[in-house]
Image (tube, rainbow, N blue to C red):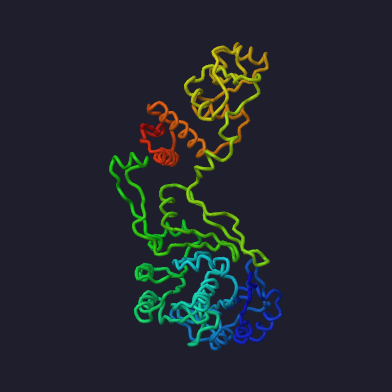
Length: 512
């Protein structure tokens, strides 16, 4: 793996600072981790690191010191940002009501070469990529490196729309960190969307690189560019894909979200309410990358599928990658859309589908006596859990007794006899299918299945009964999310399914 190479041109920033402050900064340990230098009127100057701050001197900043710095950097734009020519440093001003500078944030700009390998395969696909992450996490650094790789190593025509000169540095000659990529400066921040369109119309790029897409006009410009077949590499505000979906302005970057009213028949088929949220258009960006830490990323491929799944209430897991200290890239969590892997649930290993046994006599099933408990529900639970068990009519024949709390008080004799025979007694709070399943799990020493796996096991067993008998089977009441999983499984077996009843007893009926 390539080693990282970092250039920060820190000496040029130090030349713009008051001499005594510059001296203190130069003497700081761990300069490669320094994020910014903060100079606020009437306060002591600070050097800030990712996890702490260092006071540079005990005396506060004076007005003439702020003016000293402002005179040694480029002119401030309408966004109150300035730079130092041919460096990546950014100096941002805080002004009072009269427009006088009362604070400066001197952000250290670094060109980091060799970090793109963690997403190199994604960049090579030619898909549009959106980077998300909190301020200071390294979005712009990765954006700059991606632009260089696309221009120099893949030979593409790359144009950077550089609103604050943060990607390619201040001055008319761009910083060498962007390689052969071309840079278009933006006169005012509110004109960023217009420059994006101008770049496509005038300079025939194959790739447009844009930092901080944040307005409705910019999201529209991004969609227009994508529809012309140009690859987009950009960043946006927000830490996660969830944030983006909840942002009404930026949601268009992933296809936009709107409410749709379904017909009664379609709502029944889906097992949902009549009004649902759906994606309204193809996403502008096919891949979303969340920058969790500097060297840790979460990659959402096939954004359309991911957004659709999330809107249906099906959890998704992005691919999570980590760049280790030796430079090697490790996938620490593979991508997973949907919470349940059907093949894993139903064919994981033979032990999962063989009838399970509890301690009973050799060559015979485990005998259960239901005392006040629904026999039908108990039969169904034994079948659904694939247990080697049978229901008996008398307590003296049983290997275990399952009863209800109310019955245990009304008729304690039966239970006392079972206790005297050292037969386990399970007392349930209520006569429900899930309470019965829990008791059987304990008796047969089963691991705790997730609610999704349990719902799918029940549906799979019902499917087998429908195929054998051609008779419809109703499942246990379940949430809308679990019913959707069961509907999908029935559909895979080419069977019909519908949701019947009303919440909280709404359930799936499977039939031929």
